[in-house]
Length: 289
Image (cartoon, rainbow, N blue to C red; front, side, top):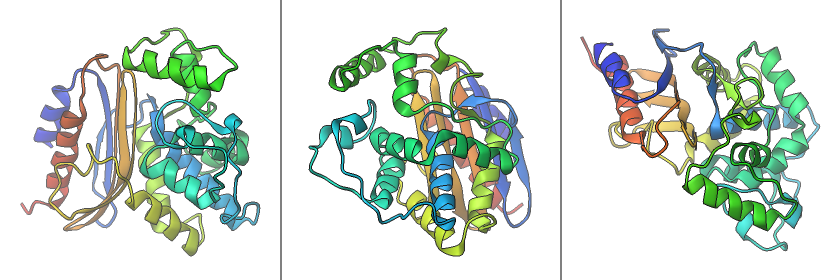
């Protein structure tokens, strides 16, 4: 535990950590109930709600969406770069949303599912610190002061201002009352629900886990873990914010982990430091004493 505290103390911002060994029940916490901006970790609640609606017969995961200009969103991803002829399935969109953090795929699902349903589900699960009111586009337009009806101009402006860290401090996107937020404990609770299959069908739980395990952005939770360690996770980051939440299958059994940071210096990449927190948690759960 000492090494975890020491590593956290070296990170230039506010850090929250929640980790729970799912077999022993042992927990590690630091600012675990504090509210943090989710950035793209909001995509885990969206993924959960997607498969909840699949289970309820509201949505057919194999149905296709004809991509049009109105579906494009700024920030990470590839759909915004592609033509209008493609017709991905909802499963394709879920994969893109998680494994490369595609914002266009995310926003299509966000609006299809309805944010009211997403937030009601989080509330029903007892995740009281979690609120997902804003789409990726709305969040980024707000944070970076973009106001245009031309999506291609919006994509360009967000890209330019994000690269220069030109945020609007008083914007809704930067307000913990109005933006997409959660807590480390809420995130690990949701991940435990997913792992245990407590709210979704066996098939849907397996699909969610499979998608999370295909993650291609691996600079935090899995980065310093032993080679071959199985992980299922989702990263997130915007100016001043960096997160990673997931499930790690360690030598002594699986554990949930959520590392969330805010108020970070604009020009500093803290992934290596957050990866050290993940490594320290792994050692705490897996090193024999």
